[in-house]
Length: 249
Length: 379
Ligand SMILES: Nc1ncnc2c1ncn2[C@@H]1O[C@H](COP(=O)(O)OP(=O)(O)OP(=O)(O)O)[C@@H](O)[C@H]1O
Ligand SMILES: [Mg+2]
Image 1 (cartoon, each protein chain N blue to C red):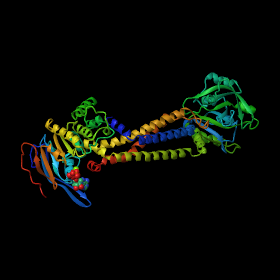
Image 2 (image 1 turned 45 degrees about the vertical axis):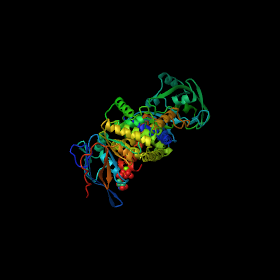
Image 3 (image 1 turned 90 degrees about the vertical axis):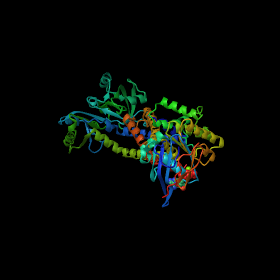
């Protein structure tokens, strides 16, 4: 269950997270005292106006950036204490990223793109091949392994990106507007895939979206407001835990 | 290496740019190989010089002769083991453009002092038996299609007339840097036929008993003939050859300057190509880092790419220039040895890799320092 107050055994625990950017000599407080707990297997959607800090939060959760203050703990690792190669290794093992613009490498085939995260593991070539083929089959692209990104539709590209995100079996998936650039049908396919990953394979999925229909797929929808989170609608059977007030400073 | 496929795919990304960059390396290394071969040609005398040999010439100038009687007198100087002499003939075969060096040599000691030249015993015996005989280097024999037993006429531009010689032998060399373009005939034949300058020889070559004593022996020789009408200048063969190269001009410096400019240009060309490659790929590099590639591995990826450009072009250029040198001297006789040694090729390859690394290092560092969050925002 997702909760905005603290929970000792949650998979992801965010405590009093602050992120301040300096722009033109002025401090921009993007995140202020943000708290969040996500349990294993949750499917969470983040919504909120443009510029409210959703991408910033996702980047911090994925260890792409470090907060100004506060901490993030994932499966017992306090990632906000890691940096450099340690953080990179942590990302390789625990996070699968899916972006709005797919971000596949244009010079690599679907197969090679999906294989990239496995390059960082000790798997042998035949083992890598098996994993890549499984992942591509899972997203329904088993017959497109040798296609280059430019030979695929947007929806297919995004599915390759999903395969790449899951191939190394990460602890959780981070999706930043994964359907933002897709037509309705492709978007639905991608969303169906993400829900299936969550419901059938028990993957923890955190997704930023502007699309209410996309948010409906999630069990929990959280709204970003003034640098903190407030709980929105949940599609789950029960709502547990009272939403904490954003910690003002 | 696991990342090889990735580097390779990146190389194929912009075919035109890749071709041009690899082409620049190929051209540069071809030029390097040519310069190296020319430098070897000019310096071969220095490089192959015997450490136990002194060249004794007229103090005034190399083209001034010395009396033949000096041989006996030099032999009396302590430390002198053997003495031979030669005279420049300066003839040509059929066409004045067909240059190759001809020496009238003192047959008794010539080969003893130049053991690097190999003549089959039987052929040398035949040469000793025939006053008009001559021994020709392998390259020159092949160049004119001469065989043992041929009678070849040379036009003597210095001594006048047409002189005919019988080819009695062909010499080979122990090392590929050795000159096999020379033509030797007997000094007694020259002495007999020359109309002027009898009793004189071009220069002496002295073999010393102990190479460490070479400087002292050279001094003793010059001292011996000081204040005579024909004063001498004795120096080690290496110094002599180096002085000879200097007379031609500062080839060494010229080659260094040309080579330096070429490699510097190459550095700029590749550096620019790599900088462009990294700039275009900002988002992709950020994605790699997102996936978990460390900053260091991104650095190696970019460096690997620039070294891959370099190696492909470098190997291509070196292979081409090696083949070119195998076809022989392109100047028709000016470069007696036209040869690209394995050492020079290895140096070329090392330079190539160095240029690859240096031109890739700044783009690679930029790629390494790239901040994921900012790079992704710029997409
Ligand atoms: N590197 C930075 N330097 C300065 N300000 C930044 C930087 N990155 C983000 N910001 C600012 O932080 C705020 C939050 O940005 P963020 O991208 O997280 O918003 P978002 O909720 O993802 O918006 P959108 O829905 O448009 O994607 C914005 O006002 C943005 O201008
Ligand atoms: Mg955003």
